[in-house]
Image (cartoon, rainbow, N blue to C red; front, side, top):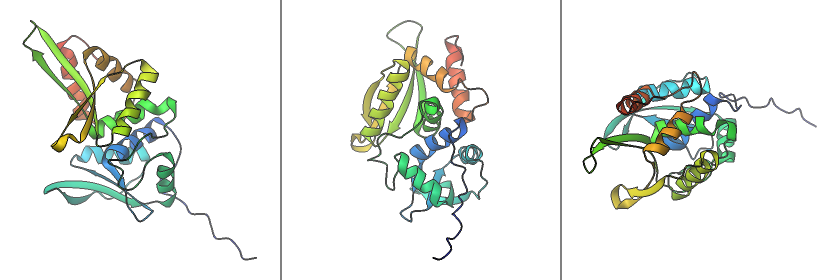
Length: 220
């Protein structure tokens, strides 16, 4: 009987933690798995996003340039069969955009994952509602081309926090599903997402949130 070769070693340490869950959130929103069965790719126009991703996974890779729909973007790509298989096992897959559903995230780290998802494909926006005097409105939104994934996000947030939000549709041909939380629910959700000390986040998005909340005398 021949000797077995050494077990393959991956670049990524596969162990749940706040940082690891955050990186999974980024991959679910802005990443992709190649059809090769080994390559994991994250693309972004924001270098800080890619630096956060590598910090969260405790890896250091080259940040390359890539053309993305006629616009300059950057990406981090590496091969890791073990990490690739792990991602497949928790719910990711190649060409996931319209078909991804539930992602198997431990409850303890769900809001770290959600912060990563928000930094990838989420946003906040605010405005003064002219219908009522001194009425400042703000929303927190998560966007996906997959209705099943947005439904899962909504159900999981409701299970943890009792918040329900509401669904809208946008983009060309109304194919993007948008899960939105208005003022009161938004504040509860944002505080939960950023509640962990020394958490990783995209600075420009948190800065925007802080400016928005200051208008109503609130803070994270």
